[in-house]
Length: 438
Image (cartoon, rainbow, N blue to C red; front, side):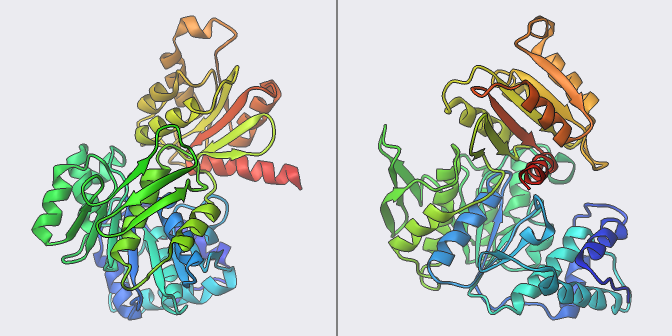
C-alpha cells in the first residue's frame, strides 16, 4: 500500500489519484466504508442545499457546543487549510490526528479484492468519518459536498436531514431545473426520520419524494418559522411544531438569509430534542458566539472590506441584498474570481448595479474561468457608456492578491471593497492579508 509522511503529501497525491475530480456515485466509497467497518454511534445531522449549508452546520455546531456536547463537524470546501473540514469540539483536527485515518482508508482501499479509486472528497470524507467514529462524539454534523443522493456523505444514514435552499447550480451533475436539483438533494432523507426543508418555496419534487419515502417532512412556513417585529433589529422568535424560542438575539453571522438558516438549524434541534436537548441559554450563547469566515464577513478597519463566497446567482442575489442594506458608500470595488462552470453572466448581471469598479482575476486551478472571460462578461454587462466615465472600470489580474492590491491603491477610506466568488478567490485575499499583518 502507498503511504505518505505528511498530510500535505497525502493531499497532493489525492489531487490526481482519481481520473476525474467529481465522480458521482456511492458504490466505490461504500465498498471502502464496509472494509473499514465504519459506522457512527451517535446522532447524525446531514445538511444539503445550494447555499447556506456551511452557515447552518456552524450554527448547529455552535449551539450544541454551548450545550456541552462533544460535536464533530465536517464542512467543505476549506478556505485556508484542509484541517478546517474536520472539527472536533470546535477545533480543527491536527495533521497528527488525521494521518492515521488517511492511512487506514488507504489500507482498506488497497486491500480490496478489486481495489477502487476514490476522489479527493471521497477519500478525505472517509478519513474524517473514521476520526469522528473514534472520538467519542455525542453528535456529528455533515455538510453535503454536491447534491445529496449520490454524494459521499450519503453513505451515512442521517437521523435528521436538512435542506437549506434549492437553486440552479452544478447543472452538469444535478439537473437544469429546481425540480431536478431538489430531487437530488432530497436523496439524503430517510424513511420515518425528520426531513427539514428551509427553502420557503421548495420544489414539488422534494415534497413528493419525502411523502413517498415516508420521511417526517418539516416545511418552513408550515411546521416551523421565524417572527420579527418590524423595525426591531435586536430580537426575533422561533416558532416550531411544539417548541417556541422567543426573544432571541440575532445570530453573530451577518446577512439577509441567516435568520432562515438559523430557523432551519433550530428545527433540526427541535426534531432531536429527546436525544440532544438544548436550553434557551444554550441557543442564545450559540448564536452569540457563532463564527464562519467568508460569509458576508465584514472586516474591521477602513476601507470597509467584505469577504463573501457567493459563487452562484442565488448567492449573488443575497450578496446584492446585503450590500444594499449597508448604507452609503461613494464607490464599491469588487475583486471577483469564479469557476468556469458557474453562470457568470447571471452573477455579474445580479451585482452590476452594486459594483462600480471590477478587479477580475485568474485563479490557481484549471477549473477556473480566466480573468479575460470574466472581464469580457463584466464589460458587456456595464456597457460602453458606463465604461466611458471614470465612475466605472474593469481590470484583469493574474491572482486574487494582485487584484486586491490594485483595489487598495485606488480605493478611498469612505469606499468599500467586496471580495467574492470562489472560495479560492476569498482564500487568496485572506492569505495575503494574513501575510501583511505578520
